[in-house]
Length: 263
Image (cartoon, rainbow, N blue to C red; front, side, top):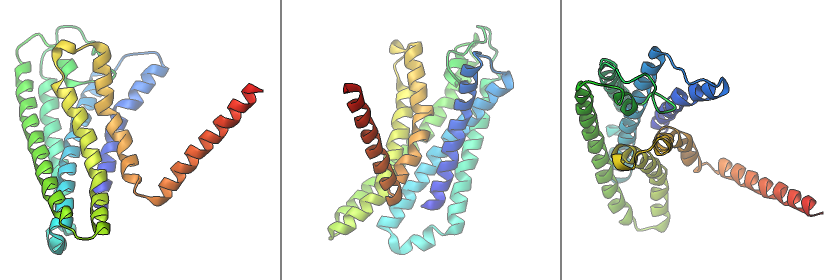
């Protein structure tokens, strides 16, 4: 589990580092410019990290399934070599998917200006600048990628259906609580990642607006990578104690401030 968490953390760090630093630099320097190479790099890295992340989340669902439903076979099914191979396959699939999307997107001629209405280079916004029917190739690739993501989603759902059936058959309440605590962080991360991604992909064009597009982009590109470490870290007792101390200090100082103002 911790090996796959390491991979997930690296992917989250990479995805949030692809968009946020550049947008912050543009805000500080009061500019909206980005070079063609940097734009292509953003598209490649975002597709790479997101594609690899859904693959790693799918592998982690299988890891939880084997740990709870096939505990006696865990060592043979998920040994060190098998874990490395599955992680490598997840990263390789993300690289291949990103290579196809990036190469196809930037081979399309753009004739409707060069201004992307977003705080980073996003494929749908780039396709709006196209004036030819070549963008249909990218639409086809998006459909293939969506089908693969749907397959991962179905695999995760089926895995958790088996997991919940096995957990409910555990006789002791302590055993059920331990099993649920193993699965809930991963389930929360999957729900956050897929819900934001599905909303971004399935948002009706009729309600599209620059402000809504910006909010949706932040939801799927910034929020999940920022919250995933916190979700998994909440199982750590020391972190829970630290969070409680921060909250108590916040209320204490705010209480002191409010008293001094009244005086």
